[in-house]
Image (cartoon, rainbow, N blue to C red; front, side, top):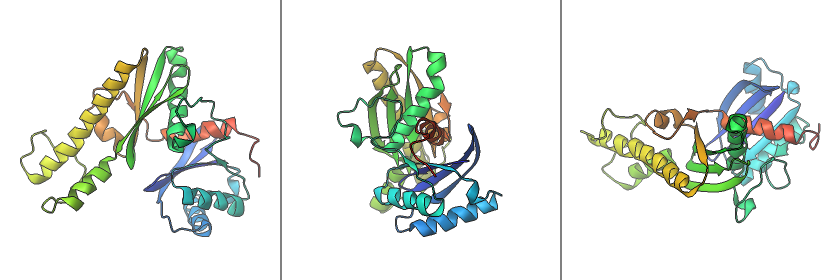
Length: 265
């Protein structure tokens, strides 16, 4: 079994694969003070609850945007599982040229999403379509992959949750609101006005960014979204064509396959 770990700023997502099949998935908070022993104990408990022996894990692949936790999860794999993990970063085979001014600046999650998005559409595109991946995480990221499978770059905006929390923290009369789409873009209460501004505003952000990116490219694009509020935004977006909440885990599985044999038990 393959254990795929996507370490984000807010949450860490785990996926258990048997072959190409995602069999189980779960989330833990990305507590920066956790030790590898704590993570190992939590992992064992969650797997036990799902009827999986931790000894059944024989491969680990990891992408992290939190450097201190990269070491924590890497050490957990080595010491608890006795597995050398594949950690997405320089030197790891992704199969994707990174056409960024400094490729080392690109977040591991963005590369993984690019790999998964391109793989998803490459057969039907026949080398004529690229892909834009929109990931609604702590930050909202846009990543562009060419029809040749080249990572071209993208854009980074504040995430939906960050923006919502910033309003609450910095405007004394504004309450904390649930992320629910109101029935109208014209709010009739403070709460619905905030919800309209945040959520319909992000719909406009996505459609506007995708339109600008398409204007700058000389090939057609598919658009896929992932992340926490992807379905909520996609339901009102004119540009998002598909939502896959497990896109990053799928990309981690692909990268694990491409590096099989480079890390061993």
